[in-house]
Length: 458
Image 1 (cartoon, one colour):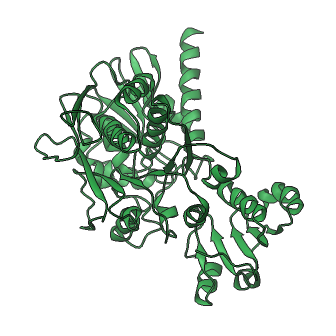
Image 2 (cartoon, rainbow, N blue to C red):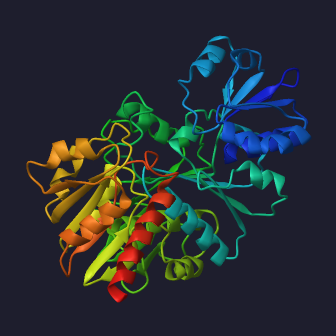
Image 3 (cartoon, one colour):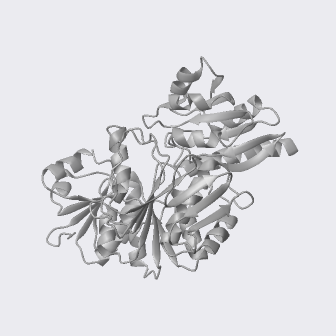
């Protein structure tokens, strides 16, 4: 892929990804302009101007889009933005960060995508590789842009990359040596025309792989749209279905993971007893560990490193994190559960009665998918923009209480619960109606739970 030298490259969106890309391309000697309609990003103007980058912040100029030699679109920017659509119609190429990274990167990449579990698996891959003695750069959708690896003089032997569907939408040349597809369930349907389009985006992580590469796929995946192209690469599967036949890959049976692949020593099979090893709950997390272990073995890691990393891993914040126990009621923060499948996974971790806090900003969410899993839910607390929708869907069959904010959600959930119950924040929605991000939402939940605890002791 060749970037234009005769005209400027326009960076659309000055979040973390856009800023890093602007710095990188300027350092490579390209003429760069940057635009963001959010006036708050003016804080970055002095640095960008110092680098010789012209900026248009607080507004968009259609002529700037039309005159660009190429436009690098930050992952969060919808491709249906009128300025982008007009520029594309006029022949201006739209690029994503993955292809630019691929053009310069020479380090083997382990790429992880899926609706849920991406960050956990990417972190596990990094930890397992490091524990195996392999230096690793971790980046992508997880927070650190991949081009930062190219700018920091990194000596990493492997790149562990969390990859979102938004990034894949503009990837034409991205070709990871090892690619992992964890799962596909309904999400981001406010951005995609239908479920099939979302599935195509996820499966495209394999599209440029060859027989020299490895694809790791969840054998139990029901992607609801019959989009299952067969990668040209070697395929490894993982499954928690006892009836699944895994020739090469990983099976999860009775709290153990059985790894089968040639990279292992004699016999090609190695069991990992997770009963006293894994500190994060849920069968889905055993699947995450299995997928990560397969990727790490293919990348040159070893079983002792895998075991050491799993034993030390306590999970990531806002993912089914235990917050406190008050009067025998346990509070869990699962704010990262921004779709129904993540909520189902959380509910499946508990056998006790649950008071469930749902709601936020919808993404064309089909909440009815939750119905079969709400049997142990004794009360739904509905909050945010989706509160009325949730109430209307479930009020006939479940106790539903609408609340205006997180504080009343926590106090209302505490009042509805009894000793031995679980209060679970697992919203099935984005956070942007009330919070900056899911982490801020989870922090607010934890803060109000702690206030309850202090009142009990006060």
